[in-house]
Amino acid sequence: MKQLSAQKTQELMTLHQQGNIEGTVELALKLIKEHPKEFFLHNILGVCKEAKGDLNGAANSYRNAININQNIPELQFNLGAMLFALKDNEGAINHYQKAIKLNPRFTEAFFNLGITYQSQNNYKAALTAYEEAVKSQPGFYEAIGNIGTIKQLQGNLEQAITFFKKSLTIFEDARGNYNIAGAYRNLGNLSLSIKHYRRAVEIGSGQAEFYSDLGDALWHDGNIEEASRFLRMAVKVNSSHSKSNYQLGIFLYDNKAFEEAIKYFESAHIGDWKERILYCLYKLKKFDEFKNKLAEVLKEKNCSPFLATLSAHYAQNFKIKDPYNFCPSPLNFVCHEQIPELIDNDQQLIKDLLVDISSADIGHRKQSRLTAGIQSSGNLFKRKEISFNKLSEALIKIIKKYFLHYKDKNNEFIQSFPTDITFSSAWYVKMQLGGHLSSHIHEDGWISGAVYLAIPKDSGADKQEGAIELSTDGDEYPRLHDGFEKKVILPNVGDVIFFPSSVFHRTIPFNSKEERICIAFDIKPNFR
Image (cartoon, rainbow, N blue to C red; front, side):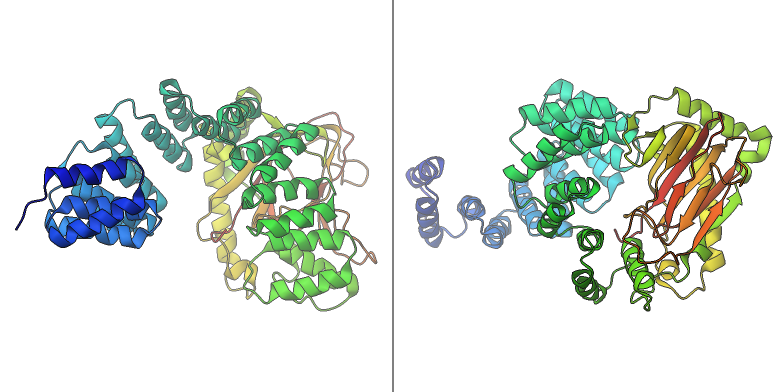
């Protein structure tokens, strides 16, 4: 068979280097007819098809090249990349591994292999692949940053920050600053989080999520005006970015701009956007529109405590049967008991928790519903302090026992109960004289509750000051009558109280001089 001439090869490469994709494809196809066994021609045809967005065509061309010569690592890598783009993760892994077998120092193959494993939530394999990439190329800052991301996903925030810092030391990029900002925020350090979000915005290329997350962090730091500016900027730079629309909607929703919030939730189409719209309609007293929208949402399979709150309140308000019936009589599903680990050993764990709360570097977030108190930011149960880990383990035992007690109840709340008890958030709340928290629910939770570490001595004449009030009504929902159930519980030190996240709860103000300290928590359902 006639050999491909150097002249034709050079002609093809010149067209390709000039960016003349159509010319390159035309000449490559012509040459393939004359030289069908030249893998180089199939490979360059694949590169051109990839540039044109024809991913299936590119994958086929790379396969043709491999069929001619399967011992070239770059060909295996190219096909792996196409298969990953086509969401064939197993195929991608197979070809990346073949590329690595042919070239054990193929850095990019290790990196892409790590990305593929990470997309499958196989963090252990992803970590190994990224570590091999760094071993091959010590200055590979993207791989170092991705190791940080895996550590963060595994809950190892301190280790994550170490790798993010190392990555930024090698090369300071916007994504690296964005990543470390998220880790600092999870640790509860809002000031450092905001610093790095600002830097990501400053050196970034206008990604909507950079503006949006900076705005959200500023909002939780109490900087409402600047938060609004960045949240709106995120939507301005990318009006179709779902997360940015959702975060702006939440901001407006929380600041009672319900009409405007609806617009952004409708653009977001993520998470509980439909429930958020229902909430806005209900708060605006647009009951007919609410009723029609509720009927539409209930046609879908929707395991949502937030939806349950709205549906139940509407039904009780208008004295009709609840069309959702998520958790009938939710106050019957309130758990109040003592945590043995907190009381044992002369309350040593409580003492350790109070020391860690006072001494750990944990930032505070602004909470509009909280009076005469402070609330921590971040997730305490993702921190390294042993006391928080011990409390988390003790709570998991109690919640599992709670589920076993109710497991035969025929309602959505129990039948769809999270099988993996993980805390989506945990924070402390300290209140002083006159402290209280107004009525609210935790919209994105499944189980919500609090562990009590310090309680004021004087509960007042009615023995309710400093107590928690649970109800089927709250948050200034429009109320047509007063016939809503409520339950008041005055906790003791060492107690835990938790309940379906659909239940309204508030702290009754107290006038005793001692602090009221608790650690609140949420558990999200597995399917969110």
